[in-house]
Image (cartoon, rainbow over all chains, first blue to last red; front, top):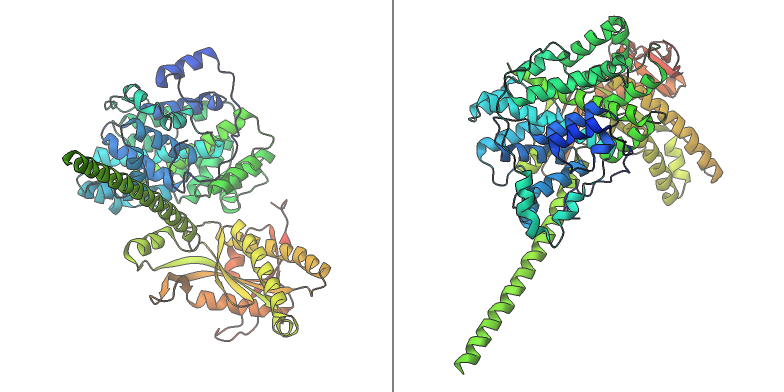
Amino acid sequence: MSVGASAAAMTEWAECLLPPAEMPPPLAKEIRGIIGRGPAFVPRLAHAPWVLRAVARHINGFLAYLPHALSDRIGLVVTQDNSCRYCYGMHRSLLRIAGHSEADVDRIVRDSMLVDLSPAERIAVDYARRLSRCTPRPDREDFEKLVAAGFDERAAVEVAADVAAGSFMNRIATLAALPPEPLEAVTGASYFGIIRPFLALGFHKRPPRPLPPPQPNDGPCARVVAALGDSPSAHLLRATIDGAFASPILPTRTKALVLAVVARALDCPYGEKEARALLGSEGFAAADVDHVLETLSSPRLDAREARLVPFARETVRYQTAVIQARMRDVSRELSPAEMTELIGTIALANAVCRLSVLLDAR
Amino acid sequence: MAWLIAAAVVAAVVVALVRSRREVAGLQTRLAAASNALESLQHAFSRFAPAAVVEDIIERGVSTDSAKKEITVLFADLKGFTPLAERLDPDVLVRLLNGWVERMSRAVAEHHGHVSKLLGDGFLALFGALEANPWQTNDAVGAALAMRAALVDYDAALTQDGLPPLAMGIGIHRGTVVAGVIGTAELVEYGVIGSTVNLASRVEALTRTHGVDILVTESVQAVLDRRFTLRAMPATAVPGIPAPLATFAVEGFAPHQG
């Protein structure tokens, strides 16, 4: 396995939490249409179709303005910061398939913040890392530095979208403890040099074109979706949020509670407001929500929510081994479908509450 | 003859090339290992100072990133440790102290705090200093209760080994501090300063006056989850504070209280 030397590669990684699911043929066909037959994670995430769709569309590309190479680098930096073993292995494999030698990949990984980057790109990568960490959240001035560095505003918006997507994907892979893809082994095999050009052809994709903003955009978190403008990422986000809240696996209020807690932990008033609106429509009075957010508990929570609410805050910043052990602990008594939806909801809440910096930025 | 010379030159060049490739490969391996060690170190340091401060120090050798922050400060101290220290063998004493620090630090870390400073037979722990934490005060008092429970277990183990049990006092206060990198090039640490820290220390000392193990101030009581059960202590004069200081003993946590 060619994962090279990095703390992310050596991260202690638990056994996968999700067993492979029997996929309904229409879903299998739909996913094949997006990403082909390849990735091994597909049946593991199929317990909650909206999560699988979101990951597949994420892999298929969702940025029209940000250069591909810079987007890859941002993905790598966010992945290293989150110590995601699965995503790190995938980034390495994709760099190898793109034609980088093992030594080149080591060099890029070793100094991902600097190698082969222009000063403007460094500003973008630095912004990405700060947004990923949110200690504290980058502010309007930070966003303006991106634009001042020469990024078109739409590309600057996509820097934030890329970080949000990386935060989403890292949490899916880490909380589920997705096993490394077989592709990693292929890039380390003796025959890799022969098949690399064919793999490269298979992985080569034209970047998606800008799309008119999604319509209707009247579901939860509509302002964040609108802030993405005509970036294809707006469609990915709208579809993912709608899929999450339409899914019947976990109650809407459980998902809204996760969003509220993550928003409070990330100091995101917009996410909190959206969660409060959802909870209000589920019969939660404002005082009840206040109580939950102040104490991470409430007599109004059911037994499952009483476990999930305090856990949600821990997913904002974490150490991999600790969060995987905690995930295993809180998901006792959850079905694979409930676990998958919980993981997707946590990942989505973390993505939305980071992306909401775009609202501060405008 | 010319053939031989040419062959020798080619062989020498090949040998030199092979050697230099090996050397480069060796250096790359060492560089990768060093880089990995640095990355791990950076992750480890992030548990003791904010990520931005760690990066400043790595990139520029210094950090000027100081800021005012509202945090919760926990002071813990072993009671009656000085006479114990005079009685016990130094090796036993150090082992006993290390066992206490290890268990208490674990309780602090499990409640989203970090031990900022060891002070002989005590320590200073901070909540909300490394990253914003809206639940910092509940976390600090939760940590204090976990420390109380951990000490009960530790004392049982000490007694079994024929060693004397330990007793501790904990003082908790919430307020504003100045946080930043303090010290010289030779000795530097990320720390906090201000009256909040001094007051937490005074409150810890008051545990002896009131005969309790955990005391919190009004600023903690005001924002604390109501499921923590508190008992008001008589206001007491403390050095450096103009008015008598009101404190509350923490009795426990009632999980089912709304």
